[in-house]
Length: 330
Image 1: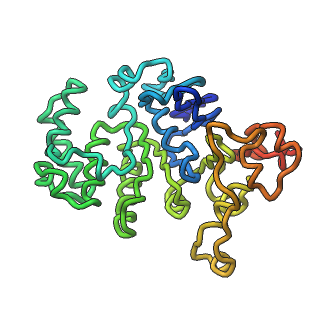
Image 2: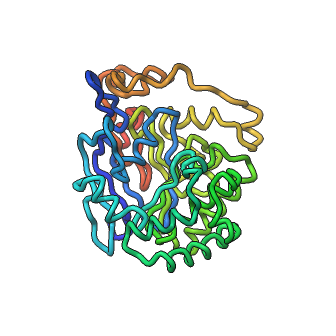
Image 3: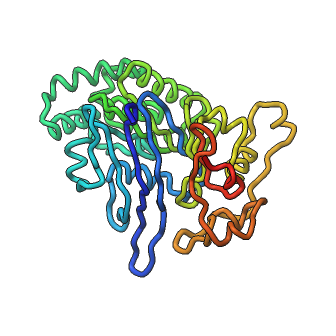
């Protein structure tokens, strides 16, 4: 556990409505290690963004943490951030120990507030010297390929890619250990996607951030920079694996379906074409019994309808939740 940065144990977070609950995150356990990039991949609505909000305890009703624990390593020891309120986590950890690039980051900035004001607000929030922090931000702007004069501009004066990099610069100015990027490339063109990924890896390579969680539905993006991948389906983790092994030999039928539905440059993939996953994701108000993927699974067995498969390690570093591998449990 020496190099674990973040640890989640049986996380459950539901959108608690008047008469029903949406089980968006339902029993997730995993670790994020220092000096790694982890991709979290799955279809829209599988709970990826909800997971990022839970990690930051950035939960606003109706989203409610109903169970589980989250631990973050701070100065060599773990702190249970799930035991704190949103305001306490925000004051103690946001920006300093962990930071997030939210969905639609280029539109997350108020158009009537200059970039410089965001840095001043950050300084005020953490009791830091504003002038010193602005000087650091000017240097960070250079590092991410932005003109220092743009710090005095309004967000609407910058292009989408520039705003994205400005958000990265400001959000990492205090050198947080953990960076969570939630669907960061979905609104960018191919050129700016490459620029963004290079900036991310540059931050990690230079030690500005220790670890990155990249949340996306785009496997082609994840495979460029990730060390490991977490596959989510209907609020559950169905597979967790080093990325090379997962791409070469996916274990869970859902993972295999995801990979088959992506067209990549490999000749055998081009020849095969795109193969879609039948059916549609389940309703998380009333998910299927047993394995939540069983209504769409080509390998469905009777036990899949009756029991929920545990997430078990079948070889070092590889975990899967599927009864196809029940006999290989270690």
